[in-house]
Every structure is written in C-alpha cells, then in structure tokens.
Length: 485
Image (tube, rainbow, N blue to C red):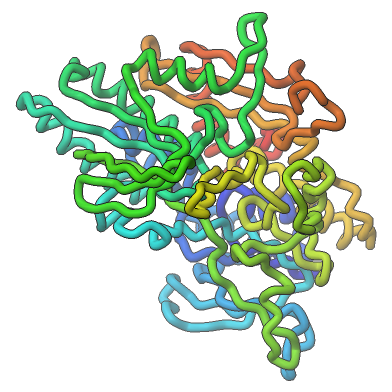
C-alpha cells in the first residue's frame, strides 16, 4: 500500500486528493492535512464582500466530505519537511501541528510515500505597515475577511445614505502584490452596489495598482479579440473603470497605511499619499515559512524552497536578464528536482520569474505584479500531479507523462460587475497561453484564436453557473469528475 499526503485543501489540493482517491481506490491511503475545517470557493468571496452571499454559501466541512470519500483528514498545519526521514523513521515525513479535531497544539510526524504541497500562500499583510483586517484596511482573501469587508462597507453606505461623501480605495497593498483580478472584480462590484443604491454622486472610487498599465493582471497584459477587433487588456480594463466613474493610480507601490491614508511610491520614484474612508487592498503573498531538514538534522530549507518560501519544482531558476526569459523556463510536472516523490501545485510552487516585466524605481523599489497561479492553473496542476502519481503507484511508471506548463496552458477568467438575473454584468476573458511564448507567437506572445474577451450579462450568468458547478464538483456530488478544472 502506498500513502500519498496532500498538504492543503484549496482548489489544487482538493482536486489532487479527490482524483487520487478515485483512481487508487481502497488499496492506497490518501491523507489530507489542512489547518481549516472548511473547503471554500474563493472566487465567490467578492460577493460576500458586497453582501450578496454569506460565508455559508461558499464553504462546506472538509471532514464530512473526506470521510465519505475514504480520505483521511487531519486538521493541522505543516511545520517542517523531512524528506529523508530521521534516525527513527526511514520514510520521509512532515511534522504537523493540529489546529482542530480536539487535538489543538499536538504535533505528529506524518509519513508519506508521495507528498503534494498545495498549501498556497501566506497572506503577508505584515510586509506593508498598517495593512490588513484589524488594522486599517479590509481584505477579501478569505470568507471571514470578506464578511468583515461587507460590515465595513455597510458603514460607508449608511453614511452616504445620510448625505456624507465617502472615498473608496481598492487595489493592491504592496509593490509586489499579485491577484489584481480579485481586487478589480471587487471594485466593479462596489461601484455597482453604490449605483444600485443611487448614491454615486456621494462616492469617489479609486483604483490603485502596481501594474505598469491597467489590465496587466500579473501576466504582462494581453492582446485579445473582442467583437472582431484586436484590442489590449489595457483598453479593456480602462473602459470598465471609466464607464463606472472610477479613477486610478497605476505604477504605485503602497509602503505604509495609516487610518484613512496610504503612502505610496510611484515607479518614477516620486512619493504620494491618498486618503480613504474605505479601503480594500490585497496583500503580498509569500511562502508559509516552512523549514526542512535531512536525516541528520541539517537544514536543507534552501534545497526545497526558493527565497520567497515557495517550493522549487522542475523550472529553470537560473538568474538571467528579462530579455532571455523563455516559455521553457516554466515547470511542466511540478516535481521537486532533489526529491522526486515531492510535488508542489497551485500557488505553492515557486515560479522561475515574473510574467510581467520587472521594474524598479530610482529608489530601488521593485514595483510590478507577481505572477498569478490561482483558479484554473491551480486546478490543472493539481489534476496533472495526481494523474502522474496514480500512474506511478498503479503501473510503476515514473515517466510523468502528464504535463501542464503555464506556457502551454490556457485559462479563463470571469470578472463579475454586479449581481442580478437581468442587470448584472461580467467581463469574460480567455488567455492562451498564460505565460507568453514569444518564440511561438512573436507578434503578441499568445494565440489570438484562443485569447479573447467580451462583456455582458451572459458572462454574469456564467459566473453564477461556475459558482454552483465547482461547489458541486468539490462536494463530490454525482459525476463530479466529469467537470473541468
């Protein structure tokens, strides 16, 4: 019997564990280690953050789901990695600390034959002074953060209803933050809710971003087919904001937040301040801060993890000029090069470099987005790694035939701009590949036959459909495996 341990129960980890159990059956053991007691569909946090959904509508208990599937669930957080075992254990193991199940604070060595790191990021609010829930801004990165954001937003709406003007600042809260798409979706929904309440005349809404141009979204922007024409995501994004009377500050890295005010640096080195009554700013992401040791106890953290804390995989991490970056630098199997039975998927793997061009101010502040790896890339990488491990176990085939480079993978993104059967809207965009391949597509870096965007009510319906479809899949309801990642 083989044992596969999956760290994390987000999109990538949940996808991997469910598929592994389906393929391997009762003969092999699947263990999921995750600190949270619930699975939660992160894309719908936006609707929680404007009061259109509750946390209960986007989450469900993991233990019940895994018990039915025959998966062992440990509500715990990983602490350290020991890929060679130690003096007492010959197999690799992960030291975990329980956060629930009545065992809070207990530690356990969880052995494995195969390990999938799907832990996702640490929300590094601490990298920006004064940023985050409990301080001066709100977040929509988790369902409890989003619920708190709605409570704060309600207060602003109440003030507006009494005739008091309010200033809304939404975007990213660190010079190197990613997840611009989530913040962009949130600002559109806030603008929609303000308009629905007929309070637009009392609202000043501003977008603040580290993107060089709007529509970069951490992937260097894109050219898309829209209505028979080729346009840029810059034009696409700007038009959405202009239509809603949203102004913006771009090329900005927020360095500090105080009550009602942010302090930022622009790419040209100038400093600025911006006041606000309500601010939702996405933090920087980093690795969770794991350590690793070999069987003698020597620290090997730098062998498993990149300096940003994410796990090294089959990517080319050679430092080289931006002009020399290639699509082939990106990983395909997500296998650690030193320990072949360890994999990292979703946000847990270390990208070889950014997708957007790295830019630095005269003050040596790097101001550009980190590469996104959420959504479809998380699901697809989780699936591919699960398929390869299943083949390895069942067929003794370690060739890792299933591949999924982000430089070959497409992705679809739906950004809602409201809520309602008849008057909601959404921007629907597909990009292929996610990472530009300038050798294969020298003009635009991507295949314009599959890189396109449209806006309208139909996209909003699709966003609704995806919410229920992916929760159906995650809950293991009938024919869940037929639904795409």
